[in-house]
Image (cartoon, rainbow, N blue to C red):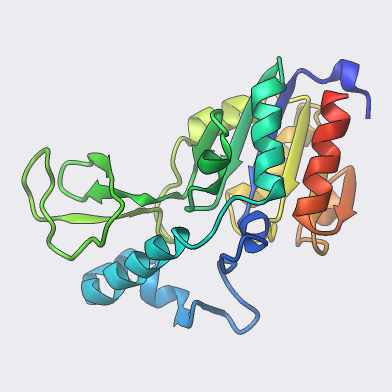
Length: 234
């Protein structure tokens, strides 16, 4: 890798980076997420149909976070964040807080955050660590319409303008632990390639978009990510 030519880095992380901390990947081989069909817990229609189930599902995911810790891959990216003198943006598809707990600062959650509540009435988001019962009231507008601050299927991911701005100025794009099948994130590699960025995939197995990358490195994130960070900071 020609480090001298790299100033701006964009890193995309997916469920694979948190799996080694003990968090379930978004969709298992049986098509279920923690025993539920995604359509029953991660769509606006599901929330309207059975708010109790949806809220309870994310309450359980939020509680699970207290039982896990950042792993070596999260820690390596936090080290890169602290020491990289150029531009860096870590975009995560994950809704956990493991990047933050490892110390990453230049971070964007495109699919929302478990430890945040969103008001469906006024759009205000606020930190939230406890259970979130249906009809909880918003501190800003007092409407009883707080919901998990999660981007459901059919909703627009957060900060897409900021993400594409970073991709269009990137010298290096790295995808870590993603399936390469969920858009718009699956298309980030093409945006990066279009501006001449070098593209690297780190994954346990080739993703649906592996052929689009300049290089694919296979193995656990806890090994591959520290190795890449060491090379970039050498």
